[in-house]
Length: 115
Length: 421
Image (cartoon, rainbow over all chains, first blue to last red; front, side, top):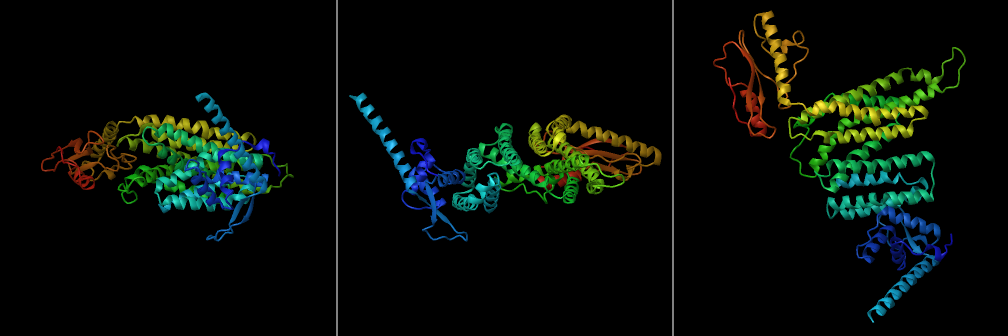
């Protein structure tokens, strides 16, 4: 299901970090949890409920897709990894641009005040 | 630690059932796998880390469930059920926080809510679905179990180990003291089934004269059995609670705190009945929401305010009167108190200063002495033998209750003999 980039932004912090985590390559659920904790310096500790709720919504919206897990699987069950789609990457880039604009704007404003 | 990991994993599996079926089928197995990995990692940091991981799941649960429900709308009944579990969980935690908050830390109040109220509500939800016969057999089992009061259970060192380290002792305490709540849960499950049967029965299409419909035949004995057994379970529940409150007075009394878990359980049972019962039979839920909590409160006031010394003396006076009646009739004092029953006394009620104690009774042909082991306060290290009544020549007898106090000194290693003849 294609999404309109304008309407989905801003992303929630959890979704932003999940997309950021998947930008490096496909990851399975547990690796995403660990990666999000590491990227956010343990500020965002996702519960599995939040993670899979977000993954499900992103799958339905076509931002991510299921792929074969590139890492060896030690469990009996077949494990799937999640990977960013082109749409997901565009959404992430749009969010990054939005944040960059905000930072630039704030920086300019503060510089003017200092002068 | 393994037990806690197992408990939390099972709890998580139960929580997953709150999600819509489609969501669960697609994500459930994977969520369980990942949760298992997170818990395995947390277990290396101790039980606190495990509880925190589980707490994180619970904290996010309402939002996650709401989001999942929005994307996978379900039938009305499942919405009700999920709503019930959510309300159960959070109401229990809030009530326990209010009741025990000043005694325990926040994490403990959550644990108590989880360990007691949530499993009980899950149990009730499942018990309703049992076959009627199975339910009756389990109910009979619970009823038999209640013949052994909780106060006797905790007095028995064979079954109760006071030397367990924390937090296990607190968890065992809560579980032991919650056992009698099963009576309410089973009674609610039985009333639920009985009301369903009755409702079906009353709403049967008219049958031809002389023709018996199948449910009527089958329900002939089940309806009275379900109603009778549930009444018996509730009576035993009240008896057990009253006994527990009286027993509590012999120690550092908790008073009204005892009522919190029974009341939560009754409210949960009432909620389940209100959700589940059809039509006007929903009114039966008021039994658990209003009537039983009111009964609990009414019965508890005298039990909580009882003075153990006065109660013991009153029981002793009845016993003394019976002994004297026996003497006038038989011409000698009874050798043992058991001889007084059933003619002079229906039953011998024990002294109540120390639970589990019996009267100190010595008697000969023309003398007797009746006493009990007393202490000034529950925490007093010294016990003394108190004589209630006597007659005849007592010279040469050891101090009253000497043997009982010697036995106590072995058990508690604090007793001191201060008897009087």
